Amino acid sequence: MFENLTEKLQRVFKNLRGEGKLTEENIQQALRDIRISLLEADVNFKVVKQLIDRIKEKSLGQEVLTSLTPAQQVVKIVHDELVELLGGGAAQLRFASQPPTVILLAGLQGSGKTTTGGKLARWLSRHGHRPLLVSVDVYRPAARRQLTVIAEAIDMPIFEGPAGPADPLELARLARREAANTGRDVLVVDTAGRLHIDDEMMGEMQQLKQQLEPAEVLFVADAMTGQDAVKSADEFHRRLGLTGVILTKMDGDARGGAALSIRSVTGQPLKFVGVGEKYDALELFHPQRVVSRILGMGDVLSLIEKAQETVDLKQAEEMQRKLLSDRFSLGDFRDQLRQMRKLGPLDQILGMLPQVGPFRQLQQVKLEEKELVRIEAIVDSMTPRERNHYQVINGSRRRRIARGSGATVQEVNRLLKQYAEARRMMRTLSGGFMAKRMGKLKLPSALR
Image 1 (cartoon, rainbow, N blue to C red):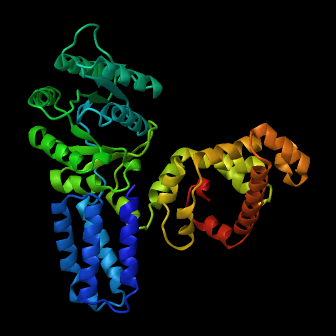
Image 2 (image 1 turned 90 degrees about the horizontal axis):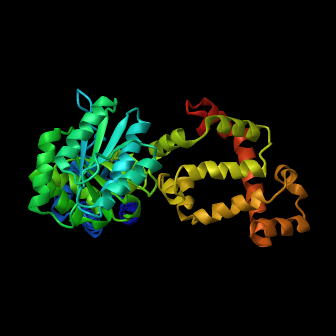
Image 3 (image 1 turned 60 degrees about the horizontal axis):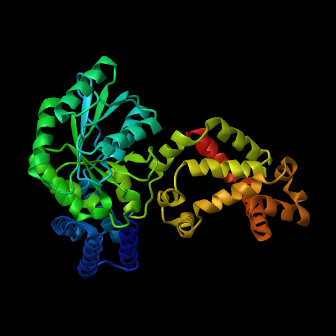
């Protein structure tokens, strides 16, 4: 996400750093370029104007122009203003003092609201809560059925209510009573969507809000629709009173205009973003981390959190011992790839790394998911002896492995070469300076 904006801002800052001494003219040109970059990223034009005015006021101060590192000072001002634009810190969910907490999901049809309800329930469950799902979209039986299928897939309870015609308000009331009686501390309510905003839909939402007294009213919008999502969120907030926004499909939005505009326009925070199709692909929105990614500084904290959630610690510790004792086999190489795939799509992982220094080259890596699957198939076609002693893999063995995995001999050769290079690199790192440094860091062993 934000790939286009990141690339353009990187060019602006590179030009600034190339100036021996910054002048007011240099900064004015940089601000013009930043303004154009933000507008091309589909950020609301009023938001862009206010942001540029604030950056300009601070960047043209005497303390910046006379600083020893004026370009870095400008970058810091842009960073701080973008963080402020997005709300400063992460906006946490609010919970009722007396359970069950009710979370009401609102949004237009096709925004991903029902799927997001399942993702949110999964997120709540992983963070110590016991959610119950309910759909009060009585107008589209397929929508209620969809939520039931999602609930089964993520192993979450759902309240389906009595058979036959149902009233949204009565269904919501019964669901809340069910949550209270069964010890469920959060009720996630998926409401009916429409193709456009209408008075009937808003009237029903207002009645549900009045009856349920939700701790959160979250508007779910498709990030790919840009300023249309912002306008819809603003209208919902004006008529319903939102407490936050969830943007879906952020992983497919290279511009990011909705994310950068929505808080300034609505006054309500962006609380979650959907970053993939899987049910665990819902993340808290961290303004500082997102701005760091936009400015090419990476998001290492989120990467560490992903690793802590998905990496098998025992397996990682065993892998570390093998590296230090030079027993890193092809089977281990395959297992490491599997662990990496658990973190998520490769382009997302690479996007969390800083685009500077040794990581800059990684941004150009175009390794597709199917390539990793092919590598696993090749290693799986080897005998245990071949995995542990790759030197025995001669020409005839390579042909047999290629046939067994559906690959070519050239692909087998390429894998063996990659493995040998990875082995040499890991042996060097684990035996030298890097090992000493990693040993001193207070990181989870899975990240060492």
